[in-house]
Length: 95
Ligand SMILES: [Zn+2]
Image (tube, rainbow, N blue to C red; front, side):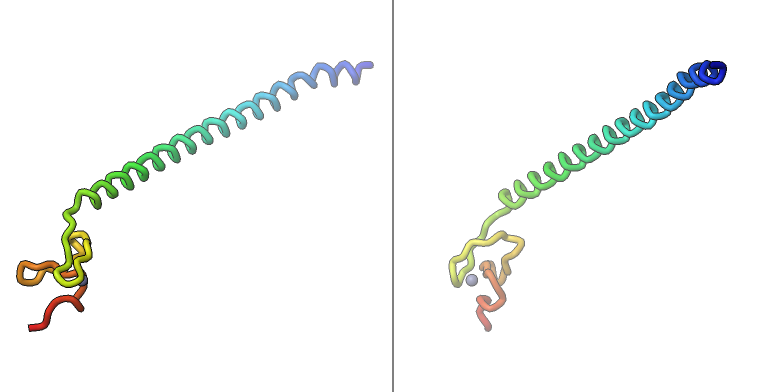
């Protein structure tokens, strides 16, 4: 009887401590997960924004036409020789 009473008295304390510990771990895990997800969302939003602005840059870039095959290509990828654009070195006329 005395043994059972002692056990009953100590039991709630053990449970409370364990409960507190698990709540603390659970709370820490939720906070960590929240921060992790928040960072991931921000990172994704930034990468999407970078992709969007990059796509806009490509669209905004001047398109030029090859003097030989008439293909359209961005100005940065074209070869400018004697005020004429060429899509490849093969289309640049040899002098
Ligand atoms: Zn060409």
